Image 1 (cartoon, rainbow, N blue to C red):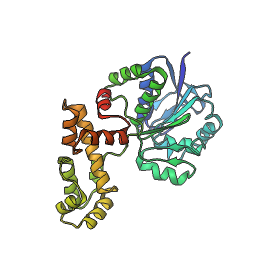
Image 2: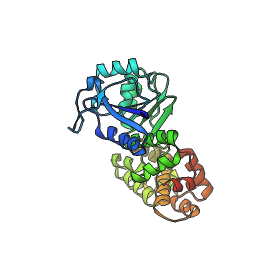
Image 3: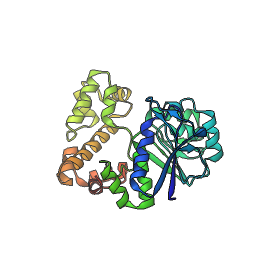
Image 4: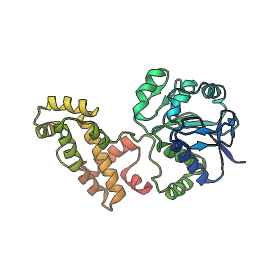
Length: 305
C-alpha cells in the first residue's frame, strides 16, 4: 500500500495548509495520501470550501499531518482527545502553521522545540510553557515530530520529509514541478526584513529603512544610519528597535542576506560580486553569513535554486 500520509481535517482548517503538503507527497508517488476527520464528517475550511474526507481518523498512518487555520483558535475537544490518544502511533507527525496548537493541546510538544507562524509564537509559548517555542525557523524537526511556520512552509517541510524518504533527486524533481526552491533550509528565518518596514510609523525610520533596502552596500553602521535620521546613535537605536521590533544591526543583516539571496537567484553575478553588491565586502564574509543563517554556502544555495 505504500507509505500512508494522513491529513487531519476539521472545521476552520486552512485549505492551503492541507493542499500544499498533499501536492508534494502526491507528486512524489509511492505515498498513499488520504484526508480524514473525526467520524469522517465533512468539514468547511476557513475560506468556505467544503471538503469530504476520505475516511474517519485512523491510528494506522505512517505520517500524520496536522494543518492550522481559524479552527485552532478554540481547539476542538474531540480532535485534541484523539491526538492525545493516538498521536504516538504514527512514525512521524508534522504540523503546519497553527496546527502546532493542536499538537500542544494534546501534550505532544511538551519538552520539545517547536515553531508556528511568528504572529502566534508568543501565544503558543504563554499557553504551553512546557513547549520550547522558537519563532525564527521556518520549520523544526524534533525527533518524530516536526512543526512548521506559516502556510507555505508546510511545503518546505513536506519536501524535507520526501528528501529524507526518497532522496534528493526525487525531492528536487517535485520542487521543479511545483516551480519552487528546493528546499528552504529549516533554519531559515521566517521573518522577512522588508515586511517590518510596513510597521514603522515615524518618517525618519522609514527613510532609513528605504536607505538600507536601496543601498545595502553602503556604510550602514549605527552612527551612519543615525546621522541619516538626524538623531544621536542612542536615540536612533531606541527609535528603530521600537518601530521595527529588531535592532538596526539585525535588520541590516537580514536585508543584506535577502539581497544576496535574490542576486544569487536572479543574476549570473559571481559570488564575489554578489557579496560586494549585498554589502558583505568579501565572499568569505557572505559565506559565513549564509552558513549561520541558512546552513548552506552561497554556491550551494545557487545550485539548489
